[in-house]
Length: 287
Image 1 (cartoon, rainbow, N blue to C red):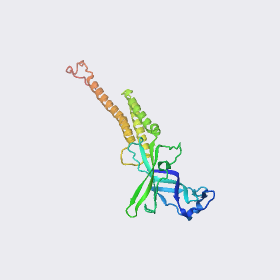
Image 2 (cartoon, helix red, strand yellow):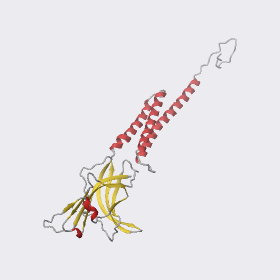
Image 3 (spheres, rainbow, N blue to C red):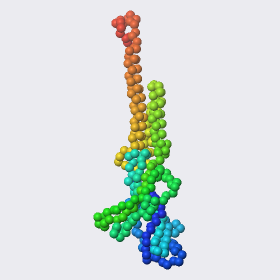
Image 4 (spheres, rainbow, N blue to C red):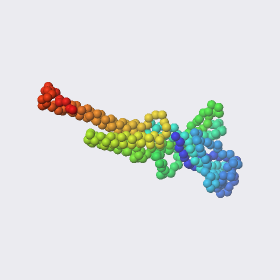
């Protein structure tokens, strides 16, 4: 699965070549036109599928240089990256995702990356919300990545924990499936001789459960393992299907019992025919 994130990426470093004399000790701010004329870190996003820098109304770059050569470089970026999600407990799942930053050309011997303020380097809006997830945790970490052909590189991690909203799936999946199971049980209170009513009710609930399962499967990623919602829906479908099988068995047994009773109640006619004598106890032949 993928996730998309928009954020401000701010770099801090010191380049003494950019220092300048200043009586007021005030920094100078530049726009994107100076970026190509100085050195900036070549940061890229590991496992990203698509990313771009915002350019409305101009390219969203900001460069601030202090008199002593300290540089602040800020850029507004949107990144779509891959996250290895586990849907075995869907929709009661919690996902751990991360966005990884690394220098493309400079190894650990040339460039060191670290979070300036540690875990407090990540600042988010207080009331940030997503349509399907709660953001439970944001954290920053760092490490090293090894490539056999080029060596070791510093890597920064933006880690976040996502917990899925359950209320949407309760309304759209769990509650309708529960109603269908309860509706299939209503047939147990209908007279067993009312064949059209019980058959129509059974077929309707079976088809409705099939529609619910198809809708959920179409909106889910195609994974090769069983999810929690699959277990719930298939068990519900089994209850609905067994209610139809129960009526088929009851109808069959009722029919066999009625046939047996009909044979036992056959009328035995008396021997009143004087022209054709019949032994007593034998049924009178019908013409």
